[in-house]
Amino acid sequence: MDLEEALRRYRPSGPPAELRDRLLSPDTVGRHRHGRRLADWIYPLAAAAAAMTFYALTDSTHRRVISATSPATTAREAAVTEMAVDLGGDETAQLEAERLIRALESAGIDTPMQGTVDIEESIP
Image (tube, rainbow, N blue to C red; front, top):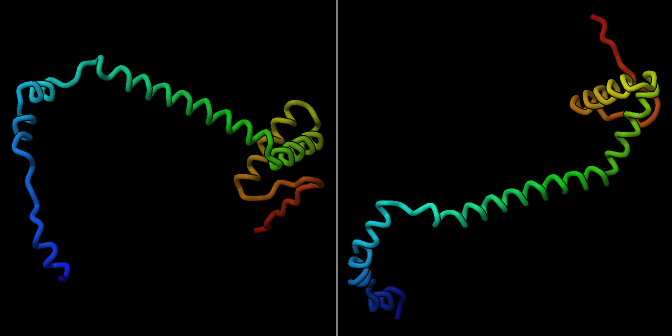
């Protein structure tokens, strides 16, 4: 017996006869037409708000833990501190060093860990 003959023995059946009556009953039609009450939505909305709050708290905590334990952060801080000392060591020098390191990172240049930064000037 091949597959086609086996499948011919089975016929698809339609939905049960009482399904139409169940779907079109006045109670079901009225509920869909008028929508759900606010009380029916309170618990799902509260659960969604709680989930979003916990996600936001967890995400920010995770970022702080990762940034605090990252070796790249330690190396970056050392580079900022060294550059700030070279610029004078005051608060303005610290801010300028942070800005310069950020600019170097955004340009794709590795921040120096020791020594000076060589800046090549192009002569037109």
